[in-house]
Length: 142
Image (cartoon, rainbow, N blue to C red; front, side, top):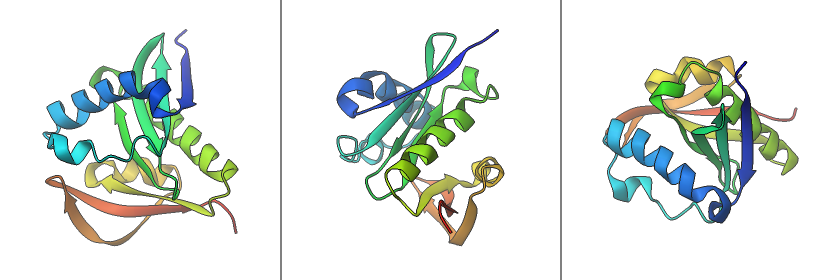
């Protein structure tokens, strides 16, 4: 039986593995320009690293303002619940930090994934790094 765990920590602790996953997914696979991927906000963020059978396969970050971003899962790890585990960890951390809601910018192909987690789109479609996105939010308190 496979084992899925999620670590959380700062960039100094998780950045080496997280940056490699992000490089492979965003820069190599999706052709996001390096200068857009490395936005200078990693040191201020809480990071999440998902492990599946002792292999680092996914990452995400929570910005100090409650935005979740840089959610990435390696291609061979997709469909294994890694993205969902990362999102639950980030949402839980945001709630513990006292954020009333979390927001993110979802690539349009991932809208259904985030909607299954309770996120709702708002605003108009926009393009970021050449990829269509929608803003989404999830209230954490009434």
